[in-house]
Length: 481
Image (cartoon, rainbow, N blue to C red; front, side, top):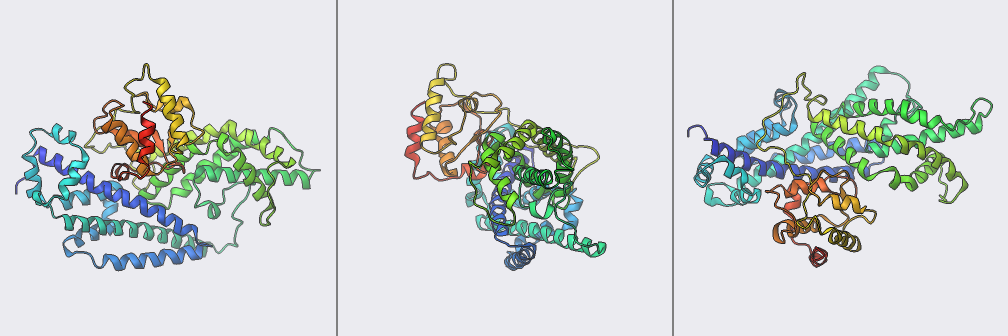
C-alpha cells in the first residue's frame, strides 16, 4: 500500500477517536472502582498489599493476550517508550491505537470512497464510525478490535497500579535514607499528606480549616495567659499562610503522579469547587469541626449547640476567601493542560495538532429563547419534582444553560446517566427544541451538567446509554417546552 490520502488520514483520525474514547471511558470506570477499593483499606500497608494483588491479577490476564496485538500492549507498558513520547500519557495511548487501526488499510480505503472531502468526514456522526468498526463489510476485524480495547484497558489499569506501587516504594526508601524519628503527620505549618491523600482539594481545605480552628481555640482556652482571641486571626491566616500552604501542597501531591493521574486529580478537584461551595457546605463544616475537636474520641453531634457560634465565625472568613483557592486550582489545571507542569512539562509550550477545533458552542440555545422563559421555568420545576436536577438549582443558572452563552455554574444532575442521555437525545435530536449543535451536543452537555459528586460526565458513556425505564418522566418534563 502507498501513503494514506488526506481523506484516509481523516478517517483514521475519526476511527482512532472511537477506540481511544472507549479506552478513556473504561479507564474512568476502573478508576472509580479502584478508588472505592482503596477506601476499604484500613491503613497504608493494606493499600500496599491490595496494589500488589491487583498487579498480579492484571499480569495474569494480559498473559492471555492475542499474539496479533501483544506487540502493541508491550510498547504501551514500556516506560522508556512513554518517556520518549514526552510523558504525555494521552497522546501516547492515542498513537498506539492509531498505529493498530492503520493495519486495516483496506477498510479505510473502502470508507474513503464514500467521501469527496475531509470536511465531510469531519461532519460525520461519531456513532457512524462506531458502527463501521463493528461491521466486517469494511474489512475490520471486530473480534480483534474488541481484543485490542480489552487488553489495552488491562494494560492501562496495570500501568496505574505500578505507578502507585513505585510511589509507595519511593516514600519507603526516603524514610530509610533519612533515618529520622517519625514526624507528626500534621503541624500548624503543613497539610496532613498521609491522611488527606484520598481527598480532593475542597475536602482537604475544609478539614485543614477545621484543624486550625480547633488548635487555635484550644490554645486560647488552655493558654489564656499567652493567647488572646483575635477575631481577625482567620481572615489573615486563610488569605495568607493557608493559601501558601495550599499551593505548595498541590505541587507536592502531584509530584509522584503520572500525567493521567494528575489530570484526573486536578479536574475532579476543580469540579468540586463548583459543588462544595461555602453556602452548601456550612452545615457540613460544623460537623467536621465537631468531629475534629473530639478526635479520636466519639461525641454525639448536636447541631443546635452553643459551640456552633465559633465554627460559624471561622466559616465566614473561609467564605470570604474561597474564590482565591478556586481560581488558583483552575490556573494550575490550565498550566498542566498547557504542558507547563506535570511529568511531560516542556520549556516551550508547543500546541499539539488537533483533528478538531474546539467547539464554539458553550451551552444549548432554546428555540423560543426570546418568548419562552416561562417554559424554561416550568421545565426546571418539573425536573426538580422528578428528582432529576438538584433542588437548589437557581433559575438564573438553569436559563443560562439554554441561552447559547457561556455558563458560570453547571447544573447538578441528580438522576442517573441514562436519564441525562435520554433527556439530551430527545431535547436535541428528536424534538429539536434547541438549535442544532453540529454533533457537539455531548461536549455541550458535559459543560452544562455535572454529577452530584462534582465530577464531569464522560461523553462516550453519555451518548451510548440505553433508553431508561423512567423515560416517561423525561417526556413529561419536555412537554413543558
